[in-house]
Length: 201
Image (cartoon, rainbow, N blue to C red; front, top):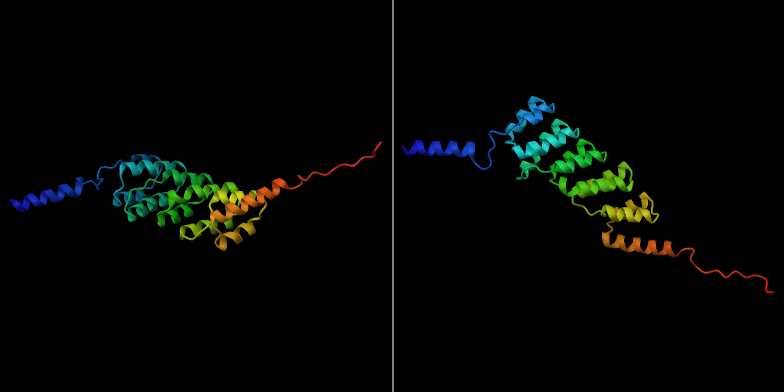
């Protein structure tokens, strides 16, 4: 009798425990055209209803089925539910591909890096420069904040000059100091008073 009770308790825990989602509704994803094989993968990953809502946002933005599944798998690998749909959608709108989303979820940095990644696009750097900066950030290496990069660019530094500073490890504080100096120099250029001498009557 005691053995049966333990068995029933174990089954109850398995199917109705806090971390189990046996009755998740996957129909929203099905309606958006997600392949049944990908839905089966999500079931194996014990995807929750909240996560399905997240994936629905991503599917509506044109993010692939494989990326959706990977996002859930990576989040669970890092022991938390997936909640980065808005970050992923913003990256897509900024012109990034699915591959960069996957790279960020692999290192659990999607929410942390997406905002700066979008800013890098707005700054107007080339694809190669953006790629270099983002990969440095994903590896935990020092780079300048996107706002500082934009500020330096606005003072007239070329992309090559900015990348040289990033590669040698310039800090945000150093960038702020240089930008302030360059801005002050620019603002005071051509402001010297020149006396106009005319013929004295």
